[in-house]
Image (tube, rainbow, N blue to C red; front, side, top):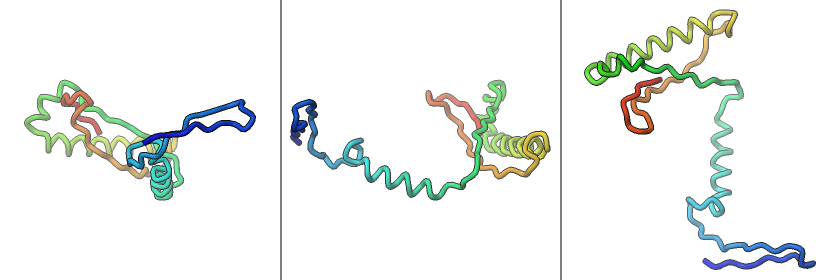
Length: 117
């Protein structure tokens, strides 16, 4: 791609500037498009505080997951909902009914069965 050396007129500083490759994965070339995409997504966010809470299935129940994954998934989400609503409805904690977005993750980064929501 080539490049060029940019120098201060007084000779105090010089830097190498490489020509653009225009590849979408290049951190230098894709900076503006990434920034505009992030700005557009940020406008979709609600201006409220949020918390990331994880509920993990005990390791003793993981063998059952292979045989009854659907049933245990439903139970996990029921328990998560009941727990969140019970604690956060209490005036000592939040005193309100929360809005909850829940997702089920069943594998760890090392692809070991690790169900959590």
